[in-house]
Image 1 (tube, one colour):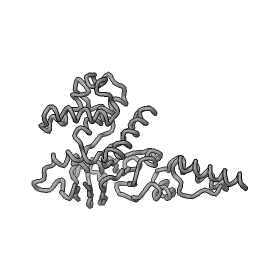
Image 2 (spheres, rainbow, N blue to C red):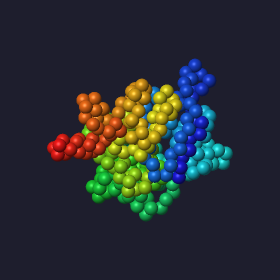
Image 3 (cartoon, one colour):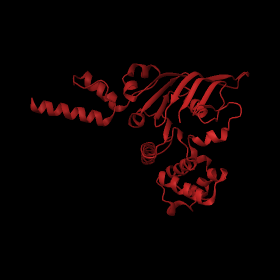
Image 4 (spheres, helix red, strand yellow):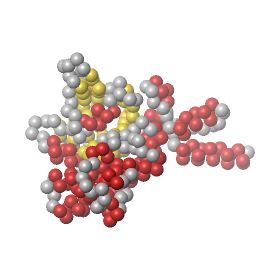
Length: 287
């Protein structure tokens, strides 16, 4: 279920003294099965872009096509399209409101008019996806849980709608390292095992390096580059010029190259760097 963004422009408070164009003339296609990470400095338009992908924001001009259907076209069932594209905001736990975890997760499926058995199936499946044991947590108040657990409940509420595309805006913001790792592991599994197309906004180049199949780099409201992490992180000068960095492994690799080590220029993950250093050590030992 591809999503196509065509000549998308969005201007806030158009026609007022506070008018501000957040994104302009953006063109982008997200294919089935991709894990796309959207990166950019603060104010680059990342959140504005992804909020268009499920129709939360209406374009000032341009189109959003989901499965070839214009989301804001005449006679289009926007509700049906939004069920296909789930959006998880920053700090989604602030939107929890039901008295139990199970009821909160069931809220969306209930609004679809599903029967009790189907709702129960979806709640159990969503809780399993976010690694929350149903018997242990279903009847507990979400407000008694840790911050990371509350966030997983909120994400489960979106997953219970069974979207084909999951959009996450800074899903690990504000979490401690343990909570962050659990959320990222869960998202990785959803993509790899659950067959969900993922679009994730992130400021962490290390997270992007370990997760993305493709990157979209934004600056000043436009897409300035798109490609695989390897292709993007080769362009370290470009990334620095727009206020972004590269993964720690890529930065360390560049420093070691400056010191004279014969390392490839396009290493960007810790695993790749470790393997390359081990190979150099073996060659030095045999010399």
